[in-house]
Length: 381
Ligand code: GLA
Image 1 (cartoon, rainbow, N blue to C red):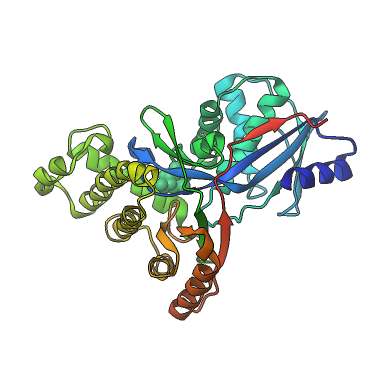
Image 2: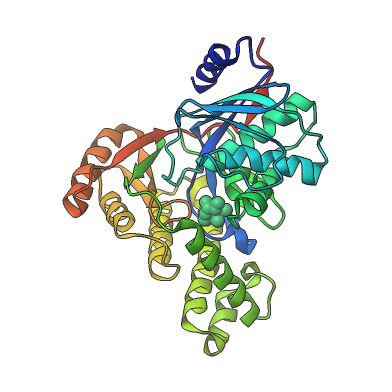
């Protein structure tokens, strides 16, 4: 258990117990990709892998240590300049900065240990889980009551304004509001979350291409700008309000690239809404068709897949037990998510592994996950 590992390491390193432990899950997005920053619909599921942080108030400096990165660091918080030393240190620093700036929370230094069983760079939102875990831990330490949506907003603001990635709110919201056994249909405009129970014979299989994301931040921010420019061409504030008819009626006013981007967003929002009933009814055929159409649209119109992601998705579609599969997360590398019948998981992974290796020469890895609860923070006894 990551929380006990974090607590044990905390005692070894700092002596005594942590005051607060927080555990935040990663997420897989089942459908609704690159729609959140267009005010649309998303369908993530929090998974039973995540990040634990164990913290305690400290006197003069903040000392953080990660069991996975194996590095320790000191920082002055809240930071007035962007923290640059460790890759992962920028996330807790950003959360501290946001708490001070947006919530007026007076900052106290901490000793902290981080432990994670989420792979990094695989598209499972390890950074959002880290942000949400720190936000929840600090809130508990200060005895500030925050709703899941507040924690998500803190994480997103840290990412947007401190880390410098212009992401939407899906990852942080999924990590903060997950529910065991359920996926979440989220309307990003209202932030309303509707839980849909996953059929008990479904397993979530994360199929990692083992090729980490490339050029993620710049390409991601560029896609976002292209969507904004497409909305402007339509005379709308966001693509959420566009229909296929609106788009086709104005096709001539568009440059080809923003048109393709808008085409993806509009059709993906439709697919995401259809997925609600497909999943609620356990309609496997429809789930499969929608996930596949989503991947193809991300490949052709949004252009965020990679040759490995395409090879992985194709390997999944015809594998035994596969209900549906597509790339998940921002793209440009990372993983595919597949919904697989429980009793065929072994056959599925063996078959996908062979096919993917034959296509790419790379050996993939798989994580078999279940839907999990969102972040929790507690004072260990
Ligand atoms: C990343 C971002 C999310 C979302 C996805 C694409 O994971 O953090 O906000 O935009 O990409 O759907």
